[in-house]
Image (cartoon, rainbow, N blue to C red; front, side, top):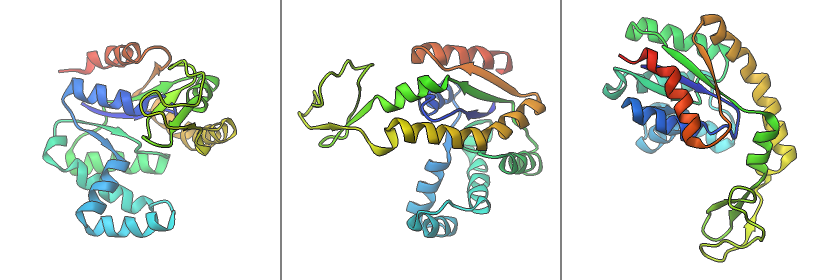
Length: 217
């Protein structure tokens, strides 16, 4: 099965991608993993990407797409995959469609959109506190943290800048601007399924698997 997973920051994409891919015995492929593998492996694409990453710039689409094409050609992705973080825009989606058709005589089976209310995303992300000593992340609501001390090591807990409410809301605005056309693209393709991403992780996973079950062979 060939799946794309989309959703806003804080929707739980990484967690759900892992569970879904494991259930289906297909590789979870994220652009972050691809970048790290190419950079650490010293590939030509990795060297190109590193030049942009070192400057803090976005890696150009052509480099990202070439990496994705190479990754999809690996043996473990032959019978299916779950893409997390790619495509990010309509041009990338159109290119992915062409790659799958031309190189693999295949197409996407389904695109799962994790749907969660903006205020819930803000609650999830702005409530996170990070231990400056051991790096563990706690949550003021989910872990009932009433102080700023890590229960594991006694380190001080702080709120990262990108977890502050104003920054989170800006990230959501950017996501909506970039991804709304992508979601519509896949809706027009007839392969988009929305998944309610609120509630316990296990319930969200069950909803996703229920949508996938008719497609399993």
